[in-house]
Image 1 (cartoon, rainbow, N blue to C red):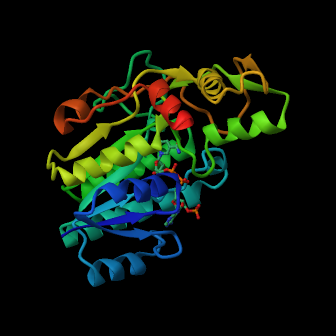
Image 2: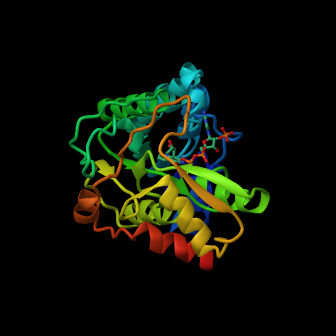
Length: 282
Ligand SMILES: NC(=O)c1ccc[n+]([C@@H]2O[C@H](COP(=O)([O-])OP(=O)(O)OC[C@H]3O[C@@H](n4cnc5c(N)ncnc54)[C@H](OP(=O)(O)O)[C@@H]3O)[C@@H](O)[C@H]2O)c1
C-alpha cells in the first residue's frame, strides 16, 4: 500500500488533507502534527524515516506568520529552509517523493501578468526569502520532488482571511480592506485534493509548479465576495483603502500562471469565486 507522511498536519492545509484523505482508502496516511514531528528536529526526522517507510511526504509544516517573520527571521529560516533541507535529504535517502508547498511571495510583484515557474524570483519580505531558500535546498538536495507554489490559502480551518472576515462581520460595524495587492484566493480544500490526485496518479513529472484557483482579486474583492456569498452584505460596511500599513512588504501583484500544472499533471483549476461560493453555501 502506498504510504504518505503529512507534516504540519494540524495546520490549515494539513487539516484539509485529512478531510480529503477519506476519498483515498488505497493510500495509507501518517498525519504528523508538530507535537508528533517537529521538522526542525533533525534527529526526530531521521528516526521517523528509519522506523517507517514512506512513498510520499507532503510537507505542509512551515513558519507562516508573514508579519512576525520580519523580526523572527531566524525562526522563519529554521522552519522554512534549514528544516526543509534536512527533510529533502531524508526523502532522498529513503527514496520518498517530496511534495513541498511554497508561496507566491517568492516574487516581488512587479509583473502585471501571471507569474510563470520560469520567472525570476525576488522576495520582498523575510517569509518569502525563507520559503525561496527552502525551494532551493530541495532542488539541490533531491530529484523526486514536486514544489507547488500557491497563494492566499483559505478554508474553514485556522487563521485565514475568510475566517477573519466572517468574524469581523459578527463583531464590527465597518472594516477597511486594501485594494493594494492583487492575487488569487485559493481554497485549501481544492489544493489538498490536487496534492492527493498527484500521488494517486503516480505522476512522475517532478519539478516546480504553480497551483492556485483561477482568476484574480484584490483583498477587497475577496472580502466583498465572502460577505456576498455568506449573505452578510448588510451586517458590516466594507470600505476600501489603497494603503494599509504592514511590517512586511507584500508583492503588489502575485497571480500565478497555472498552465504547467494543467498540462503536465492534468489538473483542473476552478475559479476562486466558484470555489468560495461552494464552500460557503454547502
Ligand atoms: N496560508 C497561506 O495563505 C499560504 C499561501 C501560500 C503558501 N502557503 C504555504 O502553504 C503551506 C501550508 O500553509 P497553511 O496555511 O496550512 O499554514 P498553517 O495553518 O500555519 O499550518 C502550518 C503548520 O505547520 C506547523 N509547523 C510550524 N513549524 C513546524 C515545525 N518546525 N515542525 C512541524 N510543524 C510545524 C504549524 O504548527 P504551529 O501552529 O504549532 O506553529 C502549523 O500547524 C505552508 O508551506 C505555507 O508556507 C500558505
